[in-house]
Image (tube, rainbow, N blue to C red):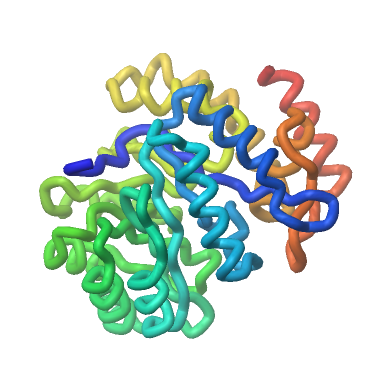
Length: 294
């Protein structure tokens, strides 16, 4: 692929487990084919929703290879590759088998809370080490640090292989600043399902979606209508999903989306500790919303 665009609906792919907490590859195949057959534009493998934090290095490699085989070249694949030890992450990027992948998605370092200069230097090393395009991932609610608009733009202007940012800060002013000052070709992608509609109206190119695991066609229709400028037709779909957005994240991600996919018959409702399944009362609320969406 000569140039990669993240325009449209990307799926933050889950990692299904069986009753013994082992990777359930049959279920992963079902989910992959479900989203691809229902017009997902690309898949993100081993991101936050994929529970990468509780997978071993060997499991991550196995999942990456499986997804390439199962995909069969149908849509672009993006590999989640992040960490809070820059040197170790660079080594991982250099040695990972990324054949079949079109880019890497790299989250800001977590826990050690670097300064903006530290974040800049970290991503300089990532961009220099990667043979694939790099998508920055800003999710301060999880990492404890915000990648500022100024730092994002500095990286975007200085490194042509940094092609996009997945923005999940929820800071509309910050995201708008990036959109208005980015270099040509640099894409801004919503990292929050509930903000996809307003962000596309500001000029974002799409979303890397959690709810899209379950409803790729319906949610993708909204994304495509927004990208075509038909916000009037897209708005009822946005409102249709609004209550579901809220309930899916009450007990953490991916607990909500895994419950939903279990109810739809795709996977078992299994997570690895320290994550646990969604509470019964939350599940009942999701069930009630699901009955209205279907």
